[in-house]
Amino acid sequence: FDMEYTKVLLISKEIKKITVYFEIQTNRENLVTGISKELEKRVQIQYEQLAELNQVITHSLDSIQTREMTHEQMSTLLTQFSCACINLEDRYEAPAQDESLQQDNRHQRAG
Image (cartoon, rainbow, N blue to C red; front, top):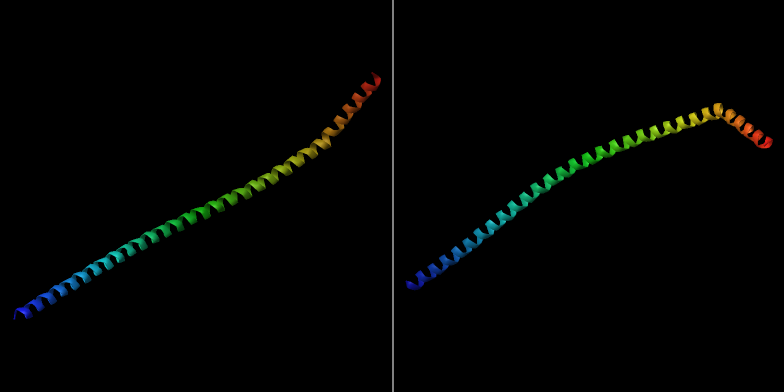
């Protein structure tokens, strides 16, 4: 009877060990699953933040390109305006300069 009882106790202890082992494994799996879900949430949040940042960058680049186009157009207009001014100077001031040069030349020849 004692041998049978001892065998039952040993089997019971082994069953408890196995049960504890499986409980520990289950807890580890739950912990790993929890960590995995938490990391997944964090990655999703970071992905959303990156998507928002990407939108901001895209919007900023569009805005900058628009400004560059405006700057380019302004530069073209300024160039055209400068050319028009130079043409006006050539048209109206050149004869006056020529006359003054001719007068200077006359004075130098006379002197």
